[in-house]
Length: 131
Image (cartoon, rainbow, N blue to C red; front, side):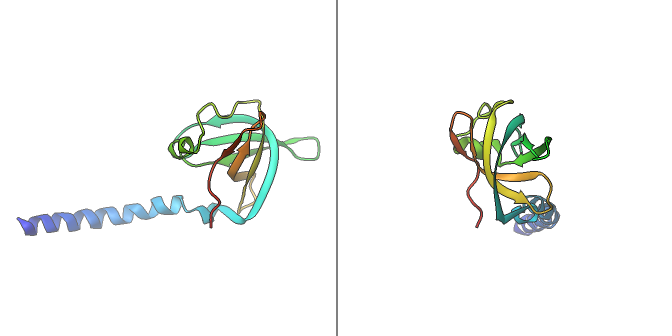
């Protein structure tokens, strides 16, 4: 019986080990964001998605040429954000917010917010600063 159990455990490990590599690669922070390049920007929230695996919000930011660039802000899970004081109603579409965050490595208009200051002046911490 012990031998059958040992074979079963070995088979489960052999099958599941390769499946974990893509999951950890997907969430590797340094692949997408540059922890040495911080930004602070102000814009208007155009969409807020309270969903797994990452809550997202989009904001329109003046581009300095009379236009607006839409920025994607990728945050942690709703569970982790809830523990930090966030809720699904923390941001409102049309609200002006200021984001302190980390820029994408590829130069795309996307970021990883460390904190968001709402129009009412409430400071919401979105993530600890990566080391």
